[in-house]
Length: 278
Image 1 (cartoon, rainbow, N blue to C red):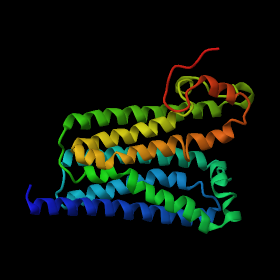
Image 2: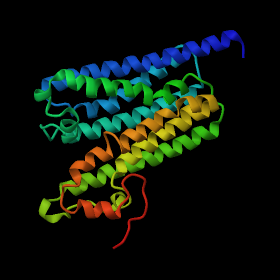
Image 3: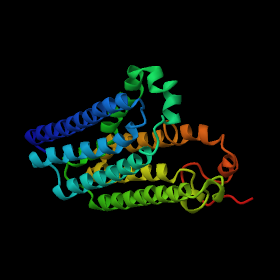
Image 4: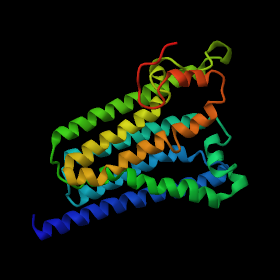
C-alpha cells in the first residue's frame, strides 16, 4: 500500500469521524434547547436515535463525496442505522408525547428534576455525555463507509444480527404497548408473555444486537485491524444498555412494583433464555 493511498485513507477516516462528531453535537445542542423549553430531560431519548441517523447520513454523504469505501456496503450501513434510529425516535416520541413529567431515571441520575438541578448539570451529565457517545458507538459505521470490504460474509452476518435486534426491539415494544393499552384491572401486574417471558428487557437486548450487527458489517468486515479498533463501540453500547443507564437503572424502580421481584426471579435480565418454572 503506497504512502499516497495510506494518506488518503487516513484523511477519509478523520473526515468521517469528524462528520459524525459534528452531526451528534448539532442534534444534542438542539435537543438541549428543547429540553430547557419543556423543563424535562427525557426528550433526549427521542434525539438518541435521531443523532445516530443524522451521523450516519453525514458519514455516508462524506464517503460518497470523496469516492471512498465500497458504495454498496456504505449505503447499506447508512440505511440500517437510519431505519433503526428513525424507528426508535418515532416510537419513543409517540410514547413520551403522552407524558408531561420527567423520566424517573433522569431524576435519579441528576439528583432532581431539570428545574431543580439546573441546565448546566443536565448538559454535563446527559446531553454532552450522549453527544460524545454517539460518535464512539457509531465508529464501526463511520469507519466502514470509507473502507473497502475485506469479508463480505461478515457483512451478511452483520445484517442478519441487525435483523434479530430489530425483531426483538420492534416486537418487544409492540407487546409492551398492547399490554399497556389494556385496562389496569384486566391485565396482569407484570408483562411476562411473548419475548418478555424470555428476557425482562427485549428492547434493550435488541438494541445491543443491532450494534453488534453493525460492528460485524462495518468494522470486522473491513479487516481485523478495523474490527479490533472499533469493537469497543458495541461493547460500550451493551454496557450502557445492560449496566449503566438502561436495564439496571430502570429496575431500581421496577423492583418496587408488585409482582416484579417474582418475575425477575424466573426471567433473564438481559440475554434471553427459557423462563424458570416454579
